[in-house]
Length: 64
Picture 1 (tube, rainbow, N blue to C red):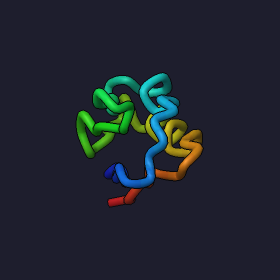
Picture 2: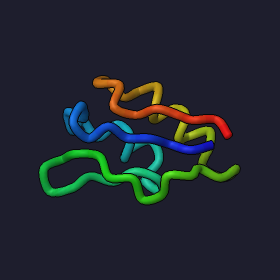
Picture 3: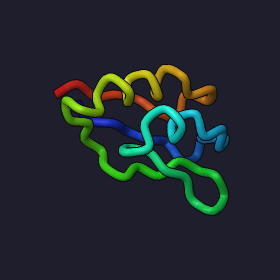
Picture 4: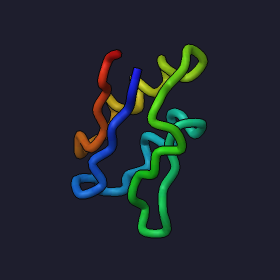
């Protein structure tokens, strides 16, 4: 599973970081930063939750 982040849409709520800090972080302006664009078995469920919780829909999943 691959994760995509649209930083132009991100509002910096931080829900992704709180949900899966192994995959998501925020820059100094609060905009999402992907620590990895691939979620493995150990982070996939939480990464899916983070995508679903994103209020601006800046995150998406690409199934591979």
